[in-house]
Image 1 (spheres, rainbow, N blue to C red):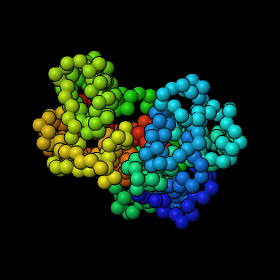
Image 2 (tube, one colour):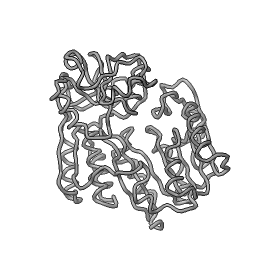
Image 3 (cartoon, helix red, strand yellow):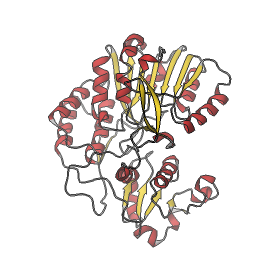
Image 4 (tube, rainbow, N blue to C red):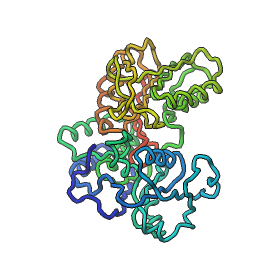
Length: 404
């Protein structure tokens, strides 16, 4: 686990800082901002569960947070949500005290550590609004989860240490090779949260209002004969989006999903979406940089992953040995993306697919994954987009120039 490089650990939570930039950064401005990010001190750190906990937000992340806390045997007092009344009879929240923000007690506000389980909007304004309501201890959920990494592999709350000269040179090289200034802005925004827990907003580079993995540049490049390799298929939402964007005109799909519970949901979705469609196959392996076996932590929904905290072993395969020739590769592997790319190098060179890979689960996402792609793939354009806040939802898109 990577900790903040400061002895002044966060005892009484203070508001996280925010900065707004009116314009997109040119390369020289981006490099100056990188100098700041590389050298400043981070005063935040993983948050311990040493006070009674409450959750703010009962959406998808709220449900994951509830399951997470149950898995690590950490109790919580309540869940606060604006839709508490509508959700009171929902089976997902059976036995949980749901509270509307207007109905919270003084003890809820002063006696709990409130973990925010919302990443679909900016964190800092939400934190300040909650403090104005009287909550005096507000933290991002992922920073709390980081204190439990010895029990649970959820890896969205990591802190990047002070950048070495090698790291700084790597980031600078990547910043110079993005296809557009929006990518530079989103990359810097990602770095600012991971390095300093500062929330940077570039006014002219908003979050894309589209499906993750299907930004406009990808949709424009799609053909009617795509061969999709969906690694980390989860419940099949990316496959559903591909079918929607192509009108069902694709050649083949191979969905990789090693978690048995996720795979059951995936099979159910595909049975409804593409019943008896022989173009679609599911494989229970995990893609990696070697063929063999590895420990896997299952039962964690979209946080299931290759991890030494797991108690089961799964078959691992290199993409090169799958016997599949994809035109589109999507990777969402909870931190194993760079290993999967290393095991796919010859396939990438031979097939020249579109690549869309998440990069927010470990420090490879600072620059190493992007640099690997940029050094390996000639005549491609490279795009970086954040699809959510708190340093999450970051995706690199690599599109062959011939797809223009």
